[in-house]
Length: 179
Image 1 (cartoon, one colour):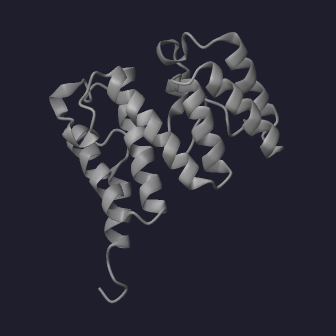
Image 2 (tube, rainbow, N blue to C red; image 1 turned 90 degrees about the vertical axis):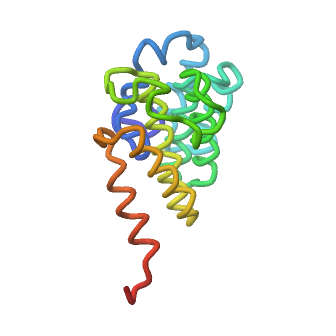
């Protein structure tokens, strides 16, 4: 599997195969899909793959498949700041698509069917927020990452997406070695 694929499992979007679902994958122009495929095939040639991803982004700038492809590319290339920027774009898209408040901090459990794991759009929001939380923590913004994790646990108290492990990490990162 190529890291820029929008199927399979990946960090931050641990079940991003869901994003290949017809609901989120529908409407992708054939030329953009071609560029995503070529990006996956040329992953080992970073500049070539990124050029294909850039073309896909020009053709479908707000499409989940393109955003996830970019996210995965940047993440696996170790370009975490770029990945965080794309995670933010995914989060913005998920807020719009779910008709949620513009700020993720204002989202409440009853705003969408967060408790129904089979509901793709609310799940996309949760996974986008999880990626955002994870990357903030990796980039040493522990407070922002922890706030996002706490929001995840508020929205998904059964922790179906596995946010508790991120909370444990954030709490360990916030402790001194002497504690």
